[in-house]
Every structure is written in C-alpha cells, then in structure tokens.
Length: 187
Image 1: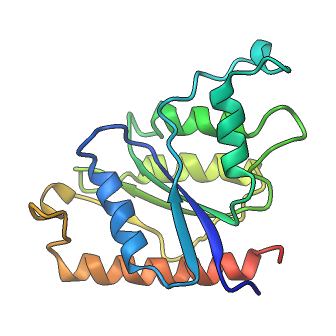
Image 2: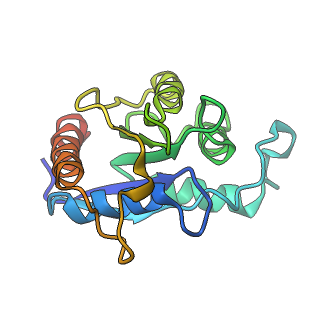
C-alpha cells in the first residue's frame, strides 16, 4: 500500500462559476491526506478523430494522455446534460482510450459524483458515465452513490458548503474513495 495516491480530478462543467467544480473542490478539501489531487482540464481537447491519431496527433491529446498516465485514480464530477454526460467528459474518455491498446484508463480506480439543479442529482449522467468506465476497465466505486441535487444554494459567497448534511456526506464519500483507491491500487 502506498502512502500517497495520485488522483486526477475531471470536472465536466466548463463554466467559470461551475457548481460541480465547487463540489469537486469541497471533496478535495474533505478527503484524507493519503490522496493527492490535481485537476486535469478537458475543455481544451480537440474532438477525438481516429484520422488524427498517429505521430501527428494534436499536442493537447498527447499532453492529456501523459498527465493521466501516472494517476492511481480518477474522480469524475459531472453535471447532467440531456440525461447524459457533457461532451468534454465523453471526449476525454475517447482521447484517453486511444490509440487502441494504449488506454490511459485501464485499471485506474474511479469515483463518480453527479450534480444538478434538479431533484435527481444527475442520475442519468452518473449512470451513463459508469457504463463507459466499466468498458474502460476502471473499477468504479459503487457506494456511497453521489447524486447531489437541488444544489443552487449549496454554497455561500465564499464557496463554503452551507448544509452540514451535504458536507458530512461528501466527507464520507471522500473517505470511502480513499479506501477504494487503496484497495484497487496496483502498488
């Protein structure tokens, strides 16, 4: 077991004031010390196109793949768009899974948190993402499930969580994710 696990955080919302990014930051701040988080941006990745995936692949793809390779786990925090994940996350999954046989995802532990202004907390996005992660050979934490709904008033003007129950839940999620990563780590 390692003393420190490298966790890539991928946020599906590109908005400057993204509530999903605030949720991701809250999880990072509540997590055990054995997890070292780094945000990996996916909004600048050109759309995946097999025709471009040779020695002249876009530099953004190469940099993304290189940044994901050393990660022990990935925390996905996603909004729900039309009952699914937003395009930046799906594109990142595609870019990271290619060229065929060189996926940066295989064997990395995953955690999924979805959120929305609606009451079901991004349930559709959460489960669509899990379907892709299964195919990509990413052991994905099953419990606790994390659907954060009606989060319009979840944060104050200083980006602090206003609801004790939500803070406690995110701390529980972060602790469980730490255990999950340790359990599935290859080291």
